[in-house]
Amino acid sequence: MPSDSSRRPTSPSSPSTVPSPLSRLQNIANQMASPVSTTSFPAEAVPQAPEDPLFGLMRAYRADESPDKVDLGIGAYRDNTAKPWVLPVVKKADEILRNDPELNHEYLPIAGLASFTTKACELILGGASPAISEKRVTSVQTISGTGAVHLGALFLARFYKIHGANRTVYLSNPTWANHNQIFTNVGIPIATYPYFDKQTKGLDFEGMKKTLADAPERSIILLHACAHNPTGVDPTPEQWREIAGLMRAKKHFPFFDCAYQGFASGDLERDAAAIHYFVEQGFELVIAQSFAKNFGLYGERAGCFHFVASPSSDASEITTRVASQLAILQRSEISNPPIYGARIASTVLNDKALFAEWQENLRTMSGRIIDMRKALRARLEELGTPGTWNHITDQIGMFSFTGLSEAQVMKLREEFHVYMTKNGRISMAGLNTRNVDYFAKAVDKVVREAQ
Ligand SMILES: Cc1ncc(COP(=O)(O)O)c(C=O)c1O
Image 1: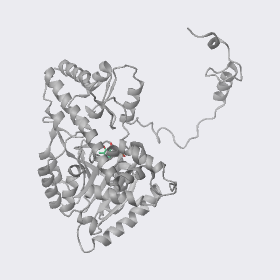
Image 2 (image 1 turned 60 degrees about the vertical axis):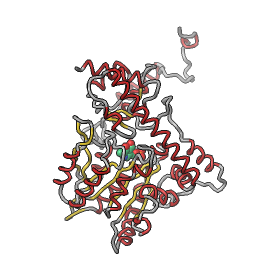
Image 3 (image 1 turned 90 degrees about the vertical axis):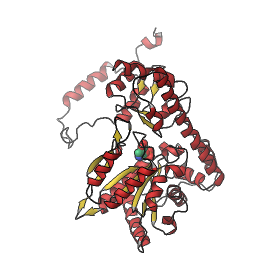
Image 4 (image 1 turned 135 degrees about the horizontal axis):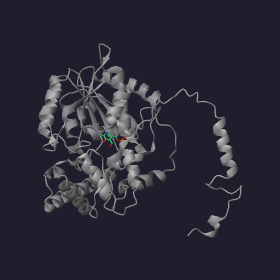
């Protein structure tokens, strides 16, 4: 029942969502008097763009009032109670920063916070990497991993040309959707290489190799360093060696995107092993590095872009030239990067005890995800859900490509309030001991109905 006061007519001065008759009349009069639009941006020139599918999914999840709803779309870590997790080591670093009387909010240099970029470089290449001691690496702090991919793409669009034409970038099929937009925006042509084998739900290694072998020499090959998004399928160390051999033979240019170091296996070295191998092999390459997932610093936008030159007598001079151009690109794009996330990461990366604690936090996150993989596979196998489910535990990192069809995904959303992307990708971090049974039963039902 509405209260009495809610029925009382509102006075002209009181705030109200119901327009008064006078203001309605005024609106109508305004519309009638409106001149014909003279916009420079008619719909033919600026059509309504579709909503980003992932952000649309998040919105639909938030609007769902079911107590059973499950969010498997979000690419961010959740703890066992489905809540965001501020890493304990990040809380400590935050405390240290807040208590620092010297702390100010001055601009960073164009290339970012040196104490952060130096350690970020050591983290991704390994502290003992000859590339570092030989001064053939330059690092630029970026707006998280997206900014690093963008800066790399922009640099290649400007400077990696043959006879004035941009080289094509080969993206895995499928890949993180933003790769397509980022490279398209800077005018680099896009092609794809096969990656996911729908039959085995593993790597289509033969397809991948064939495309890399057939691609024109000196193509740009975008490689996910670990925990491939969206499939969770990574090449084995042996397969990485073959990929490197093939790329060397074709003089392809490696562009590593590393958004999940330490988050995939819980082991920082292991998750960077592919990059270490390519650098050891003497490739000239670039790396986009994100600290969003492994530090839980999603919104703080801490990331880094690295250029590594091949070993040669002029490697250090090449690196200096590249650094000078990166600085110009960065200046016109963002002037200088945001400081807070980089300070947090730097505080941890530069302190032995905090670094060790961070590794422990990484093992907590990756361990919980691995446990959820095991639990989901076990539940589906116990239920005898048609199909094979070993891929759930074979895949690694934040995401799993379940093999569910778009129709099954939509059914899960409509009947069970389970939210995942239409390609059947689930974020393992959205599962927990409270909802994994519910999710397995829902999957079992939609898979059986499709039989
Ligand atoms: C493959 C890949 N690259 C880059 C990113 C960039 O993320 P951010 O800009 O949040 O660091 C992501 C995030 O999901 C990703 O999955």
